[in-house]
Image 1: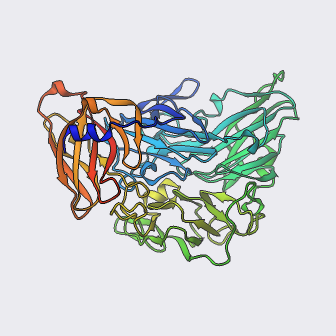
Image 2 (image 1 turned 90 degrees about the vertical axis):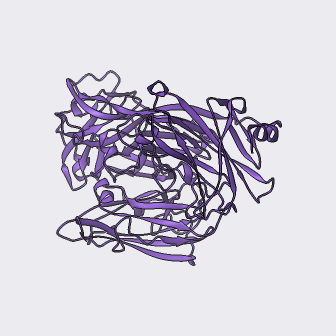
Image 3 (image 1 turned 135 degrees about the horizontal axis):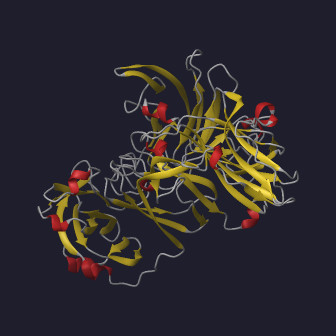
Amino acid sequence: MTRHFLLCTLLVTAPAVAQTVNVNLVAAPGTATVAPGVTVNAWLYNGAMPGPALRVTQGQTLRVRFRNDLPEPTAIHWHGQPIQLGMDGVPDISRPPIAPGQEFVYELTDLVPGTYWFHPHAHGMQLDAGLASFLVVDPANPGTDPSYDVEQTIMLDEWTNPLGGGFTGHLLNGKSSAGQAPIVVQSGQRLRLRILNASAVTSYVLALDGHPMTVTHTDGNRVRPVTVQALPIGMGERYDVIVDCSNPGVWSLAAADITNRNATLVRGVIQYAGQNQPAPAPGYVPPNLATGSLLSYAQLAAFHPVAPITPAPNRTYTATLGMGMGPGGMVHTINGQSWPNVTPFQVTTGDQVQMTIANTGMPMMPEYHPMHIHGHFFRLMGTAGGTAQPPLKDTILIRPAGQAGSSVQVQMTMDNPGRWVFHCHNMEHLATGMMTLVEYGGDADGDGVASRIDYEPESATPVTTISGTAAAFAPGALGSVAVQWTAGQSVALFAGLAELSTPLAFPPYGTLILDPASASLFGTTTSNAGSLANVPYAIPSDPNLIGLRIGFQSVGLSALPGGFRLGTFQAMTIR
């Protein structure tokens, strides 16, 4: 195959990709001011903590060109969105990690309306260093959401100085209590709060002094309204609430640890226009924070139609959460196994799977486990929604063994082929092994690469990848560009310095991204028995090449209709 093959085959009219929101996002070291005169070292998205909130409308595609300027590999997980596996941002599951100095383009389609967020899913404690922000997807029909006049995102977190510094404490929207600017409302308005617990290790209770909150969404999904005095929120969970602003004053929006509601850890300020009294003291504990009625999962019911609870699931599993001793010390386990030495839950496309998630940890060491599923939603059983309107969630806070809520039953519709991680969102528990896989059988896209290993299990597309190691891109380095494709099939890799301004779709062949006018054949090879084709390279030992960016796109021969498929695009920068 040659450059002429690529040009001649694709010189047909193709529709441009429409309704796309383009965003540039960079992760890099920086500093953040968490209180007046108090600055900390942090890792930041686009230089801010929290990072920039990304907002699109249902039906739009979000294309995020992400560059990693951190000193270690990373990736971005789009928490809660049931997107295709290749965009899920779990290193070595959806793609290799993104090496320092390299980039990846996240193409997010079919986004579900609601409040979501993004953060690293790499090894270590990158989330602790400041890398998090909101992804808000507005519904295509605004009438499907409750009415409100003003809204505010609320991100709760704790700061432990992972990169060194002089401040330790809890943050609301990246600031301590001393750094809060008031959220100003008018009497009579309806205030929508989009609340996220981005903490690595703390589950909170949140309350607004002088006001009840009406819960309208959980983990992005609308529920029938439930009015509560205080809101428990585990790591990774989100709640949208409506506050009727009918009690003028200056009020504390206060958060406590779920294990001690009598101590405010951080607070924001809600100030009615024209009210000029001093802000509540940072340590003030509102009565509803200490003793107000808490939201219970049992109160929730889906607002919009959902798949019902079936009395005859195709598969039934138990996920028993515990602790044990491993070679290096204490480990956290699911069914007695600690990542990566786990036995995946096996499923088939179309299955209705029922799972009991039970915390059997040690009573003398009570632990909360916010259990998060990727690529799917849980349907909670035993709630006000009954079997017809079960609430949908992606993160469920499992309470300590022996307490109410220490065991929860859910069902899931298996409609997103691949291999998906299921884990505790307490980062310490995750780091010590509390993660496993939900693994689909079969080959959903018919490309000869099994869904359980396919980076793009629903798209018959050669997947172009580069190394997750920074040393592979230095002058003088030896490396290879890898293409995942059907075993035994020929693969041609093209390289160029330019991309098309608008990608061109050529069903069923794929999408052309590399500009054919700049493309040259880089190498050809054949996929091995493991469905990988490796095209080697040797970077000349010339420091003048530093900063040169090269784009790659592959073409794989195939027994599928048309005889070939265009691969994904991947850039590489010499560093």
